[in-house]
Length: 319
Ligand code: 13P
Ligand code: SF4
Image (cartoon, rainbow, N blue to C red; front, side):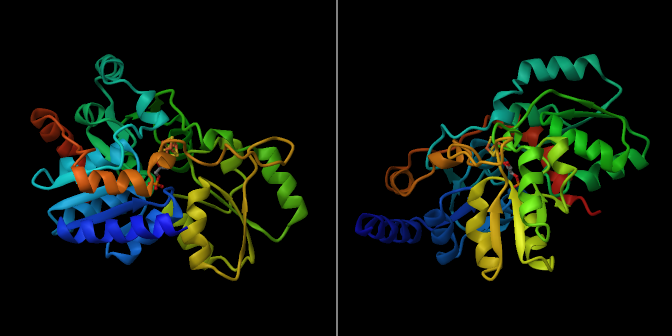
């Protein structure tokens, strides 16, 4: 629509005037992903978003995603201004892991190395020895296990269970879940597979174990896009937020992508497979943030320094 065109032009001009760069997650709207691409920003998974923001020389990072992504950017680049289209965009994993309860859990298990998923608040990260994202989690836990360490993992029980299975590590799991991925149903994926037996199944490991078991490839959003390119299959069943289809379809224009069913009867449900918090990012509030400086992310200094340590461990980790 013409309105969107005008907004897009405005955002492009504002990005330039502010020496700002747009860092977007694969689950945000197509228009935002396209804008990031066209303006020299990045569209990526959470690990690549963190790396890109930390390395980029812009004065302002505009992070289109959810709150933890903006906080991570600010922790890694305190000298930059970090803006988000809305600070209301949270994550069920972050919400399900309050810092005080988590801290008590850590206190009760002092013999364990604390590894937290990036989808957490700065205060939870500040209690951790390591932060990981889904693209690096298995490698980091393998490394810790080889050193004989026992793990306390939070918050995603499905991702934690998956890592445990992959590595055989001794892991104590926090009871958290992603409301989007938890909805994918094994029966629905099996039904779709029986219609298209030649299809490969790609699954984000925040999904339940019964769904991950059906996967030809399980991995982070970037790893799933890479797999879509590398697999020979013409049809792909994808169990992650449908926002990923924009870049995945670009990467494999000749292939047919199916959204993994979120109901046991094989039907897809309109409100599922899309993160309600990622969906809060829009052209209007993105323009507003740049125009008025709203949605600026601040992280308390002491907290920032404490959270920086486990984040830097992740960024410096080589498998
Ligand atoms: P990725 O690191 O795989 O992009 O995951 C982030 C996320 O929030 C998945 O729900
Ligand atoms: Fe959090 Fe799930 Fe949304 Fe990702 S998709 S931001 S894990 S609620």
